[in-house]
Image (cartoon, rainbow, N blue to C red; front, side, top):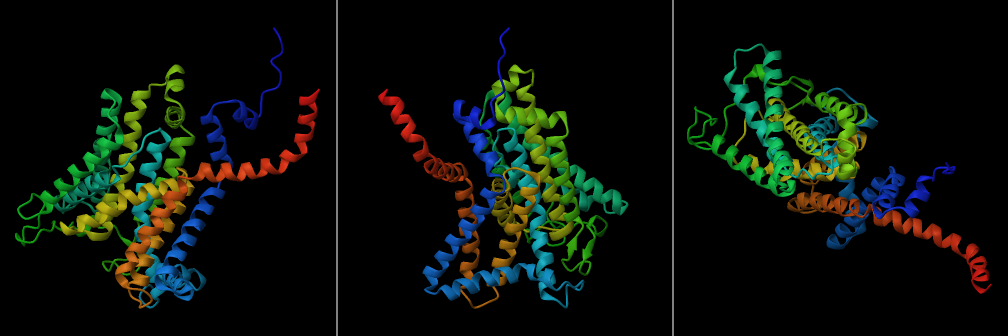
Length: 415
């Protein structure tokens, strides 16, 4: 048997292999560079837009300064534990409250991505977790507080997992694309929540039958605040649950057989099936795990934040939480730490824009939310162009090396 010779390097394999292998190599080579460049590009373009519309570079600088101060990140330079005597500390606590569900909805999108699926149903899964948490948080009022919280969180998470699993089953059995099915499931969850919390609904507040608002969860089911005064919208312990979910996400993908199969299916379903992996089963359980992350976000928001929901308020999380989770996952390159940092960035943008700019006279307060959406859209746009950015960068390096090799090639061609 002849010696096959040394194994090719990843670079050599990419040059002689398929386009998918080349793209995968470029994305791995990007590391943290592409997300950082993406954020820089998004903020630079946003800065240009603000400067152009407000006719002043100074105004644009002040706008981004107000967003930074509104997010409370300046508290880190002079920390204090009293959120009521320091506005920056309070702002930071509210930024972290925004970040908590975004971590989980980002993980929901990222986990499905790693299996080659696009879970656009984070909004619906979030609402399923919220509905179940409200139902059990109201009906089991006399239960031990620890058991009550655990029951609400577990049931909401499992219900959302089962709900997301529907899209996985449809994909595995009849080939229905998960984008279409999850969009439809989003609207089913939305209108179900509107009916349950609306006037005459099963979960509507019985003390005010004309007010479309849900019952308020029992005080025993309320997540305790560890920063700020209990009951006055302090930062609750749900942030630690989200951080624990980041660890679980990393362990599942990188230290378990399940994670290996999910990643194998995401990279190449046909090769995974040839290697003995049940692709259909992985589609179903990857979607279910994704839904569990998003449902957990809904339970935390219900038990730790709102405690009840009006029908009109459903529009806010429905528009933001699940879809921002897509941007968070893309910016974090579907990794655990990247998703965490992306969620913090978007949490700061959300609270900083609405409350930093909304309470100032720098620009029209009604434009503050639109600026947030512009930045989000630009981040998604530039994240989607990561392969193009790396291709241009690598082409520049090849162009520098080409003059040294061309003379020899011309000599060979003439001989």
